Amino acid sequence: MKECTQLLYSGEMNLPGHIHPDAPAIFPATAYAMQDTQHYFAVSSGNGEYQYNRTANPNRDSLSAAISLMEDGEVSAVMASGMAAISATLLSLLRQGDHLVVNEAIYGETIELIDLILVPLGVTVTYADFLSPESVQAAIRPETVMLYTEIISNPLIKVVDIDAIAGISRANGCLLVVDNTFSTPFVIKPLQHGADIVIHSLTKFFGGHSDLTAGSVTCSQVLMQKIELKARLLGGCSDPYTAWLCLRSIRTMEMRLSRQMENAQHIAEALSGDPRVAQVNYPGLASHPQHDLAKSLFLQGCGPMLSFRVADDQTKVDAFIRRLNLITYLGTLGGFRTSLAHPATAFRTEFTPQQLIDFGMHEGLIRISAGCEAAEDLIADITQALDVFN
Image (tube, rainbow, N blue to C red; front, side, top):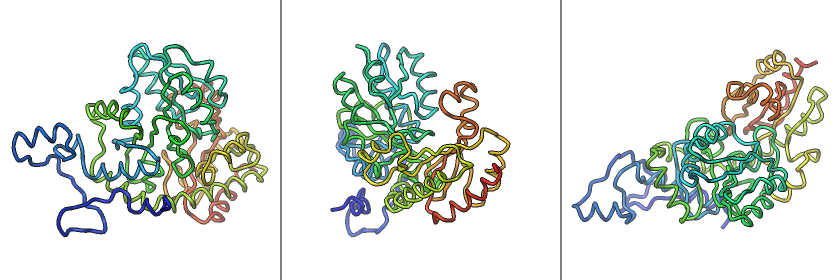
């Protein structure tokens, strides 16, 4: 059966008796009644029944089942945000004296988590260029226990050779953790390429409507036993309604992503021919330095995210944003409507001006999260707004 068909039915609840709603129920209860002390002990020992919402919830379990299907994983845990998922994973699996090798081009708040929380706890870290497997191998130490990366980087849309990185990880006995938020499992399933753990900010493309905040971790049962306990103690569980809403959104995710990836390709092609645009970053373009790698790795399309660079003039960038009629400036991504972000502004308080330049976040860099509109409408909107650079 095709995955897009399975996705419409995954996570279904089997309710007792003759109750068979076409939409799943929401279970907001904080606790469930126990028959007696023996029953309480059996549930506490993990017999699969529900006792307390923070420990387990039917809506989270349904969503977890759907995510595991999509990522081809054994088990998933749903958490309150993408950062909750990242925090729970790293804090559960790293300890004082461990060494972590991290892609230098990852989500800025992941870097903050590592530098402000993990490093003071005694974890050492090396930021490496994951576009170069040789640089990653050179960063490995005897005490290295984990490699952490994204596959499509934010905001420069560079592509990591995940097969090569997984080979390095296996050869050195390290865990490979992949944040697959930017890519989504419709582009690539990292576990099939040798990753041990996959993390998502479900807030983005899984939710897809800018109306929920959640995260997930997918891995083996063995690793989940280590992660889930500490995640529970850290209190980062998702609420039942959010889990229910995210599962509903997943039902249409394949349709949304197909349109979004088509639009990203069309926008990138249009921008690449515009003289006012100095550079377009999208792996679906033959000009992209990892175009051939992307074609060999990605399942369908090159993702819904792209970025482009215009003149490094903040005044004109602001004028460009204000001229847009359809595309909205948002501090997030992944919605069904097209949005943009200005990376330099997003991280201006976290990094120095020189660090922003070193990371490639120039004043003229604009990131686009393609939505589901007609591609010609989006291109027309961007084209007329670019007139400020004439």
